[in-house]
Amino acid sequence: MVEISTSILTIEKGREAETFLSLEKSKTDYFHIDVMDGKFVEKDTYQKMLEYSTYIKRISNLPLDVHLMVEDVKKGIEDFSVAEPNIITFHLEACKSKEEVMENIQLIKESGSKVGISIKPETDIKEIYEYLPYIHVCLVMTVEPGKGGQTLITDMLGKISELKTYCDRKNIEIDIEADGGINLKTAERIKQAGVNILVAGTAILMASDYKVIIDELRS
Picture 1 (cartoon, rainbow, N blue to C red):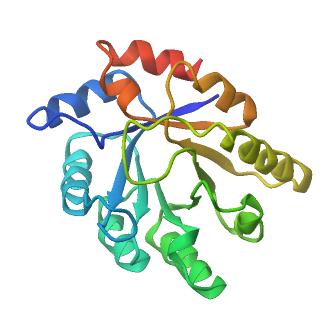
Picture 2: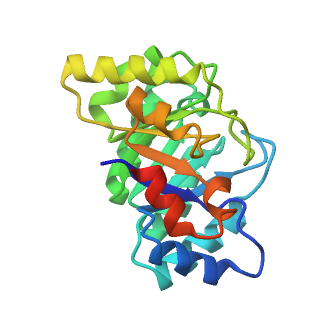
């Protein structure tokens, strides 16, 4: 069964509480928290996402799916682990060495969250293979990280298929998540490539009925 992680990046100001509760009622599987520091990517959502995370934790039982697009991964883990997210994902490209990658994996595990590693579109999928036995989620960016509402880079479908084939061959159990340009037109091809967690923001938040589109993306 495919799960839906709703990105709250483009949520309408002043309607946050109403939207969070509507998404929960519509049975999204996760709230996707896009954390940006203005350095790793141009946009800065850090404080806003900290506030959203702690607020959601107070009013909802739905799990948080935290995606750190930051240079200082350790600080991001420490700051966002307070909200007890289900998943904390960091970018492979933010780490300067294999040792740093493994340290971040350990830090997330110690915080009680599942570990995700994300890769940008230009990063070769093979670069993540050695870490797969130690993590729970691989997040493949299907657009350049940092902005909502972008168009899917279709070349990423081959990358997802390659990852899925490798995991099956090596008997590695892992969630494959895709983020960027996901809507009703693109979702089917992404699922066929091997993804089992879809991140969607604009497609859901612009819909008149969240439940209808979440159900359609999932089915």
